[in-house]
Image (cartoon, rainbow, N blue to C red; front, side):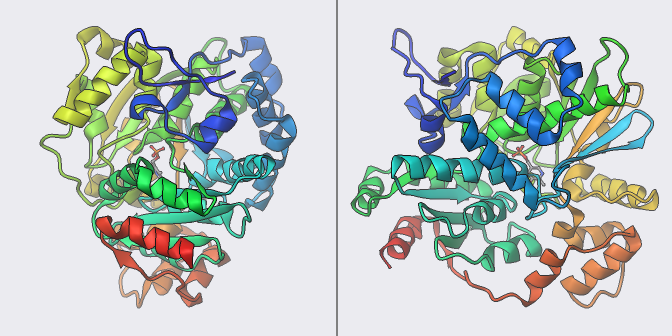
Amino acid sequence: MRLTPTRSVKDEKVKNVNLSTAMLSPSSAHGGLYAPKKLPKIARAKWQELSSLSYEKLALHIISLFKFDVPEAFFKKALKRYASFDDPKHPVIFKKIDKNLYVNELYHGPTRAFKDMALQPFGSLLSQLAKERGERYLIMCATSGDTGPATLQTFANDENIKVVCLYPDGGTSEVQKLQMQTMQGENLKVFGIKGDFDDAQRALKTLLANDKFKSELKKKRLKLSAANSVNFGRILFQIIYHAYAYANLLKQKALKANESFDIIVPSGNFGNALGAYYAKKMGAKIGKIKIASNTNNILTQFFTTGVYDLRDKKLVKTISPAMDILISSNVERLLFDKFGSERTNELMQSLAKNKFYKLSKQELEALKEDFEASWCDDKECEAYIAKLAKNGYAIDPHTATCFKMVDTSRINVITSTAHWVKFTPSMIKACQIKDTKDEKDALAKTAKILNDSVPSSINSLFSAKILHKNIIKEDEIEKCVLEWIER
Ligand SMILES: *Cc1c(COP(=O)(O)O)cnc(C)c1O
């Protein structure tokens, strides 16, 4: 299968590409992305058969259906990365926590956020492709806190890849910041940016389109790529854990014949929710995909009114920083799937020019067939954290945004995206833990209340050497990146 640009104009010949090209050069025509035109479908009986497979085998099967140009051996090697997770056989932990309520825990990887689920195999795959072509790449990533550590981790010490990671200074948690600032590897560089995540993402997009910058890199025999979820190579691995949730429900005989279930996804850039949508299109019996947001509730507005409106919005800092996003890049792939590339181009041009777009009534109805959306403010999230902690289950502030949409008259699967250890200040506030000396002490006290333990990789962050200290302005990025490469 080849991937198609999400944007086009009338009568233009569309240039489809292989997965390897889409991974190595993720931007397509007119500033768009790459997406599958059609998803392979798995029949009902086959799902039953797949439900007995291990995570890795299920992943390989699903990937094989796409018939991509990348050899199976590459994928096999990439999926071996899950061996570094808490439980190598079960990189994802699927749990029942209440009647009709399940949690798909996706945060058991090395950096304790669900980003590892995709970035670990993605990093291996990209590196293998680069090696095969004899090419060297500079991977630029903008992060709201979790993509950064996961991207640095997956590429650390890779010969063919250099990584520059941009995070909004003051926009991440302490643990997230330390994870980036202490990451070792000659091939890694981290910059804090004065501004918020949208500023960092915009700066990155501008730089990726800058010809002068690219030609400077060319002199150094470096090509540019991106590891944000604009890269389809990441989305591919994000389909699998939603399919795995379905497979688990089948295995546990939790679903009656033809019964569907809903998935609730704490959303920011919409990569995770898009994975659920693709899994549904592949035949997983998903009813609604429920999009959970924090106070930056632009997606709630979009899925309930059909208007994507940046005009009156300002990014608000919340206790779920990975969801503090207004420009949700992967919505574009949904628009493409539902309405085609010409219409997507029209809508995205309107967003760039007028800071908003509006779907027609029929278009909105088409989205509502698959999606619902709602949001929680910080107070509500803290209340959910405290309530669940009392019941002996620890959730982080991102996962907390999901609970408002739980409807236990049906089977609901909550997609849990981060380990609570990454967000201790919010946890101690929610659980009303007092008299903590510092973050490390707060971690220990929270763990005690939650009857949980702090992973050693997190505790050791507090004594690790800070290797990356630079805080820079948006307009200094180009210069600073080139200086680092020159060195
Ligand atoms: C990235 C992230 C999200 C948002 O996921 P998207 O795929 O960008 O919608 C939610 N929660 C956590 C903890 C994250 O790291």
